[in-house]
Image (cartoon, rainbow, N blue to C red; front, side, top):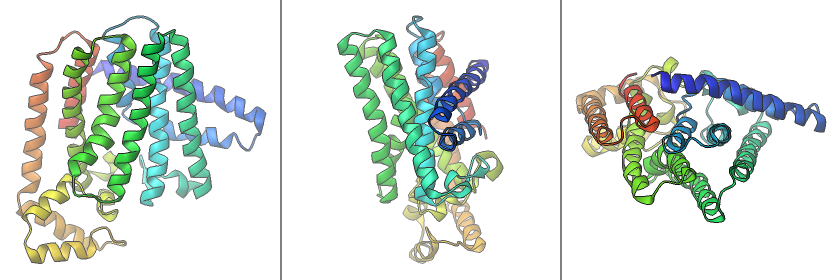
Length: 331
């Protein structure tokens, strides 16, 4: 547990220093315009798991000890891009809460939120490309890193679009929006910067993809059955937005025609009557979906843990993934 908590502590301190420096740079441009950096800083300081930066950093440090400070600063890229994605995602979903506080467009206004998200993406790009220059990579390795970074960004936007279009393939959305974005690509970029072989990377990618899918299944699960204070947003938010999650998929596969008609009459529509939400939760219990998903999470976590036991046990990335697994299986 200390591996992740120590990383989080250092990360929170260092990214704060970085954003304070950026704020001073913006104040030279215009005092009022520096508000955009202040908002990014405030949003980042709301907290977060920091899984993506940690996965990137420990993937690299598991195979190389060179230029670790430069790599640590590069890890900011994944949190700043995530900040951009969340701010814009909240606009798309018309969400009111994020991490137990008002969303940026709700607290300020739509234009400010859009521009703040855009700036966070720009900062991520600036850090990434400047960081690559400081690593003195060969042109081939640099191109590979850039290609992976572009894939990282483009895949999650494709996944977000498919989610907005409410396609039926929930596993495709989970792979693009979570598995590749939060687990596979941050690690793969780190592995490639460390210069390890493709065969070793492929072994890790399989485990990371499975962990990412499990992470999203758990997220969908707590999105219905969890505690709003813990997840930082209303537990019915996915329901109000009409998101086609694994929970919804299982319900539609098992419900009767009458249940489906009733469900579709209020799914994804606002405002939602609390009685309808209660009926839906009771229906999930009646169809044994709660117990089945809970069991699936436990079994999938066990399978991933067994795969990790076949990997080098002293590597930080192995230890980190075991910590993440524990967090996934416990609310």
